[in-house]
Image (tube, helix red, strand yellow):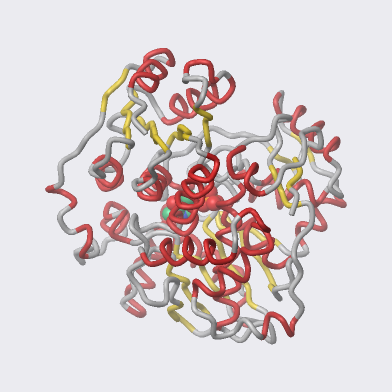
Length: 465
Ligand SMILES: *Cc1c(COP(=O)(O)O)cnc(C)c1O
């Protein structure tokens, strides 16, 4: 399997290279050159497989011979053994034809564990083979940081530096990052906001001179192809459990950077019968506006009850645009260059094609709270605010009259107790057992000024792997 850039001017890479690459040299994102295809008969044969065995079948064609089958199996087994539910991704019914796919049984209680548990192990495996060590650098406003740290905590060949805005992440999220022991784990609390952190990461990828010669810099945000790949699996898993491929299913996906829902799109392109993919957004509705008006434009960031979806642009949307524009890398490069200087308008042909599979809904904080309360009152099921947006969008879509609608539950409600209180619920939300002592655990982080040179000097001086 070869991977090519959405902007058409970077060399094609194999899986191992794309794993370590991050952004392509031309500024584009890597996508598979062709997708493996599963016909209805082949999908039927996947029914009843446990999560790891299904993952093995879905992931193998993407990984190719970069990881031999027995090793791949072992990496997948170890990754999903960390999940605290035997089904890994259980489905729960909340109303007629309405389902919730619980993706929050991993170590950090958010769906990002599905990709990052596997990515950490894959990276370490490949680095061991290459006798190479790397530095991971990432910025987080919450969930990505803890999932990346949990995924890399046992990796001998990786130092991981996670920047978060000092005193601007929730206490649960901060403690999940800073209470993980390990010489290779470095939490940097930057005296700035999330955008400052992200700008420092971007600048560091642009000029890696501050690192020792032998250390490559690796990205773990959702521009990393392996994250998207791992997420394709649970779309198959849910659809198979609900009668696929003989009964099409729709998915409602709480969306920020468009990584998760893009995996659903790939599942559909690989042959899985998917009726609709619903892009569920909070007030940061750049994708909802794109889909309904064909115009893609930045608006000021709004802080909502669903902070993991607070974004102004969705970087992975470029991966979909690449297909919508007939995989013309030159066209995407031109579009993205225009977007640097202002709003852009997509061609009607491209958007008509997008609308044949995707629809979108924008959900306010008030509606999010109302949904948390009504789902609780109807079936005593507690939604986290991100998932509540997905459920609301699913209901508004009216699709349940036609086919099963699965909302991806992207986080555990105990991660966002403020939203539960805002919804007017008095119930105590307990952290799962493995995190019950989170508030007693020792924290470890370094506060740094909002200066690139200070951050880079700290990194250079603290490489331990
Ligand atoms: C990251 C995240 C999202 C958004 O996922 P994308 O892949 O960026 O669209 C939604 N919900 C939660 C809880 C998250 O952590």
